[in-house]
Every structure is written in C-alpha cells, then in structure tokens.
Image: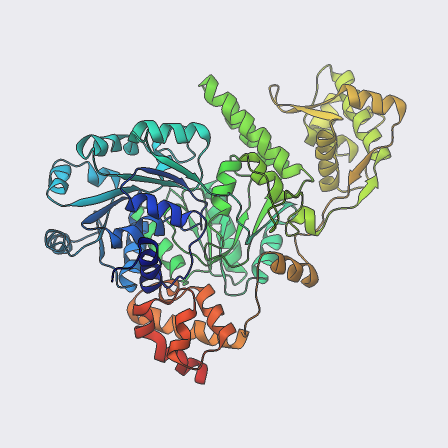
Length: 613
C-alpha cells in the first residue's frame, strides 16, 4: 500500500538525509515543488535552502537542474549528496574531459537525479538543446538575488536565465535566496517570470547566533581573545581591503594561529586552494574580503568577526550568516571604528550615479544607527527587515538575552561635564576658523595634541585646548559618537564629515542640562558566567564532551581517508547528539538527527566502537 504523500516525504527525508522533522517552511516549499508550481523562497543562511530542492528531486521522475554561481559550492554540494547515497553531478571547467564524458553518459542513462550548472555554462551554445533531450522535473535557481542589480551580489550573467523560462515554459522554477529586499524580490519575479509563484518568506532570525559590537581598540588582541574562546573551531574575519586581510593573517600566524588571507587579488587557483584548506579544517581562520563567503557550504563556522565596518546591514546579515549553519551556538563580533564610517562615506561621495549615491548613503546611516544603538541587536536587525522579534511563546519582545546590549548593558554615567567640554570645543573651533572640523580634530584639541595642523590653525590658543587630558583619545571619540546618537552633535556627511552642534546641543550647553551617556566598553571579552548564560540562550544542550572529542577525532580520520571535509561525514550537531544519547546498539542511532539509512550502514558499528573505548 502506497504511503500518503506527506508520509512518503517524511520517509524520504529520514532515509536519505537522516532528519525526522522539517525546518520552518521547508515542508510547505517542498510540497509546492512536488505539485509542479513555481516558488520564490527566502530562507536565512543556515535555514536549509538546499533541502528544498534536493528532497523533491529524489521524489520526482527525471532530472533536477540547479543553477549555482560558484564551482566550489557545486563540488561541496555534490560530494555531500554522494556521501548520502544520492546520485548528483556538476558540469564546469574544473572537470577533465574524461570526467565530463562520464557525467554526460550517466545523464543520458538517467542515473543522475541532480545536476549543478553555473549560469554561464547553462547558456553556452547548444546546452539548452541538450537539456531538452533530458526530462527536467524542475529548475532550482540558487542565490537568486544575484539576478537583481539592487541585490548585494549582482551578477549580470544571472539576467540571462530568463532564457530558461522561454525554452522550458512548463517546467516549474524554484528561486531561492537568503536575503532580498522587496525591490530585489520584484526583480527576481520579473526576470524569471514567476508571476504565479507562491512566495515563502521565513523569519530572518538566526536564534543560535549571538551579536556583539565593540569599539575597535587593539584589534589583534581583541581577535585573539575571541579565537581563544573557540579552540580548534573555525572562524572567518572580514576586512574592508586586500592589504588588511594580508596584514591581519600575518599577525595571527605570528601568534601561532592557523590563518590565511582570501581576496580577489589572488589567482583563482590559489583562492580555491585556500578555500579548500579552510573547508577541510586545515586552516582554522580565514581572513577575507567580501569576495569570500557565498561559495562556502561549511556548517561549523563558530565565529565571524568584522574587523572593519561592513557596507550595509544586508551585507552584515549575509556575512554573519556564515556562522552556525548547523544550528549550534556561534558568535558574531564587529570591531567598530568611526574612521571606517568616514572612509565609506568618502567612497559613497565619489559615486557618479545620484540614485546609487542616495541609496548607499541611506544604507550606511542605517548601519551606523544599528552599530551605535543601545537597543537589543537581534530586535534591531530583524526590525530592519520589517520583522518583529518574538519570544518562544510567540509574543513580541524587546530583548533576546544573548547580544551585547542585553548581556552586558553599559551603565549610564553623568557625562554633563564631558558634553560641555566637547560641545564648547566644537563651537569655539568653528568660531575661531570660520568653518567646522571632523571629530578627530576636535579630539586632538581636547587632548592638547601638538600636531602641526593644531598650531597652524591657532587651535592651541583655544580655552578648550588640553581640557580633556583626563580621558583617553579612544574615550573621547566614543563620547563624541554618543553625543551624535543623543542628538546633541550631528555629522555633516555632505560636507567632509565635519561635526556640528545641533539646536538641542546649543540648549544643553546654554542651560547646563544634565547629560547621561553609556560608559565605554573597554574589552571585547565575555566573562565565563556571561558566556555560559549566552550559550544557554542560544540553545546549547548538555552532552559528554569527552565522547564528543573522541568522535571528532574519529571523524577526522574517516574524512581524510575519503578525501572529504569532516562535516560531510557527520556535523558537529550530530556528534553532540550522539555524545548526549550514548547509544549501546546500532538501532539506537536511528533516532539521531543527521543519520540516514546509508550513513547508519556505513558508520554505525564504527561509532559504537568509539563509544566502547
């Protein structure tokens, strides 16, 4: 007797992938695809996008075509599917002539269920003609936001994908992306003609990620503190420039950390080698520009650090989304400096397209509000995407309990005297010279700096010169930004980023109004107590660490023997579940998430041997 459709889907999910339940919206998306309808799906990074086409591909007759932007991503996906006993392949320039012939033979024999192609390869002359000879069940377009010039990773070649709809008008299309604004979604629908498609938009919340934003004071020291709390765990550090990635990587190597730089200035071959070493855990930390990330299918990245300010909140969300894709607690830390904002503002000012300049300027302003605000990071981040953060009971809440602003809210201090000195200094410098100055120059005056510019302008004669020596330069810069946030100062981005006293600031100065500001944070480290509290909030569970570490060692050996990344054998989440359950029989492993029929047969006895030791 045939199983009902949903029971059959669950059986395939368990047998092929080892999962007993769906993640949010996966079931609904899979059912739409199985019913032969177009779908536009927005699922966060780590939300299980791949399963939305891999599962129906197994259940439908014929071939599923997956359009994917990066060669490395295709290879990782195919290796993972083969490890689960699923027939998959890719065609790209990385294959030898013999390997390509083998793939085509298997395709014509109907032995391949999922084929990965880049948009460039799909549209080479004759490819669409060949695909017409094969029975396509549906087409999945991964990273669909690449189709829109309003997306954060626009790729012109994606625009040509409308030829797929023209050639295969009756073949359903599943468009998938991790983040897309309303404008980007409209572009995806228009380009792929998804006018009848059902839209699924999952929560942007990544409940297992923590968010912290701290002043960038001693970056290498701060980075080492974070790495120190993630011994032998993988991490990514994002930098704004190629030179910075090289410098940070060298600094870390000199401190005994296994780190490499990754940027567009490297040859394609060298980038691929470094990426592979990182994916296979031969390199612990990748220091990268935004050129790195979209091709990474590594679920066990435990920390993402932004050494520099990202371009906008979309980029920040996408880049932090590289952490914790296996659902285990992971952290995201931004080292914040206002000098980064000034650099980005200068870059934006040089844009020739007025509309692009306006959009970029507004995006940067929103990012600065997010970085400098005192609101819960998760609440603020979700709010940007138009989502209200809710607790486990589904009730709106203003605190997540796991970000810096929730875990370590900074005490407010009486900063009336500090505010008076800075506001007065800004006004006196402007009155003396007839024009305004940037925050760094104002701090130079307060600190009594002897730089040439101060003397040349006569600012060493101002009554506020040297009036701030009781505080460090970093503290004054921080208080300046806080005064901007409070609305007492404003940064004139249209005029060289100078600081100006607002009307509210003038009233505060005149009336000697009491000003309270948050005290600066002097360390990026979390206490053990706070870290434990954070992990509990992020969903950490109890397991036997000795067993987990033994299983990890065993996994490394199996992965090396097979020439695969360790996570493709089993994820950390699966190993932790085994270490918590401590099974005595092979059959006891059947209930563990991530262990399907093939992996149970392959590794069940070996796992019990490790436990028996």
